[in-house]
Image (cartoon, rainbow, N blue to C red):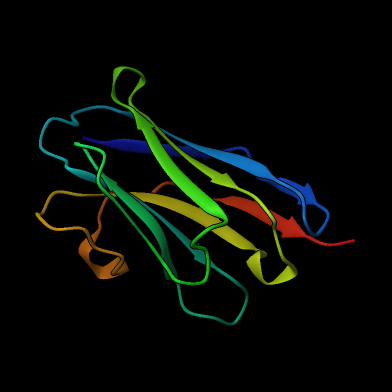
Length: 123
């Protein structure tokens, strides 16, 4: 069974940067994509960025040019580099795995969710 664990969250000032990590363990052979999602209080979970095992990526318009997703298959780890952070980026960030084909930012396509890591952008 696949397990995912996020790390790297914290408190940062507007304009600052954070790098989130998603470490995978367990049976990962059949999983093709890892996605990052976020959920702010009172809001629905939304897709942020995803990456296929071949390195193809897709990001939400709200983070394009600021967030970069990457993966190190040898370490079974996916990263989310977040720059120029804004208060509206404040949320719990989750990573999840998707076994299907085609890049997807739909939370309902994903299974094997991590517990999440809190990101707070505030002065």
